[in-house]
Length: 401
Image (cartoon, helix red, strand yellow):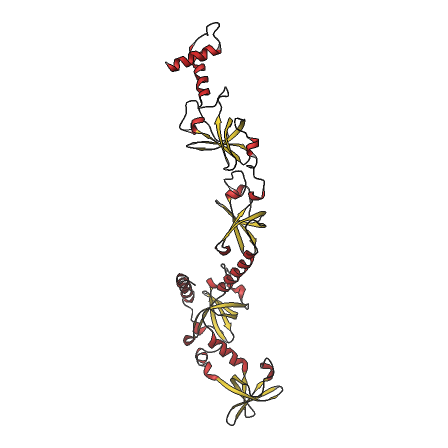
């Protein structure tokens, strides 16, 4: 855990413990007794087994008994074990192995180790718990991965928690369930990520939608990002118009980085690419009807078919060679364009708008046609016998002069 994480955790613990006296938590046992409990450990040597008891030698002329049921298996004569003194009966000391095990577990606890605990109480700062016969505390912020509105729903639950802070002199034990859950989630994510590979197909459920894309759960606790640019081959501005939370999708794994913390997903990659074979559908010099989708300072993008756009440079948008495309065309307008260049590999199409005569705007043929129109409009009536060729020659002569 990083220093900054430690500092944040310490701040959370201190805030949770504000006004809480761990010594007074009603969890059973006295604080002073628990401080010195380890001094009650006694060693006993097995000298015999007489069910239901084990006979122990504690020292010269001192014997005791311990229930055989407290041993995992029948102990060997001569084996040495730790016990606590539970009382006296018939001149013998009555011993407990379970009590000794609890003391040992308390003495062996250290920061970062995992323990089982049972929730016994709730206060404003968090959960009161027992670890064996010892008391502990789980700050509310450490009780789960997310916020729990009503902590009392966790009463009597048995939890596995990580020791975040232990001070035996003050009988202080602070635990975190969130840390254990986070590590379990990391382990599950690593296992799930290990089964994934870029290019594989997977199903995902939309969990939330943002302006830049949609987060999809592809495995319990494992999410990936479907970026808006990878949703469809056609341009999509707002994913919320096409998706809803809870919807299931067929997706492709595009990339896996940071050990699975970042997983890129794609949907359009599972569909045919509209640019495949585009050169055969839109050959150079072919004339096509398209729709303006975007306007930029340098020109207008025109969609020829879903997912295939070409650029009409600003110099090919108007007779007067405008510098502002928005003054000439608008988004959604249909234009008749001629394909001037096709780069299927680079996914680029160069287009030119056609004038009313079918000439390329900005080209020499368009300039010649404009000159003819000016000659026609300058004469109230064309001289008899003056054909189109003569008008064109006069226009060209005027330009040369």
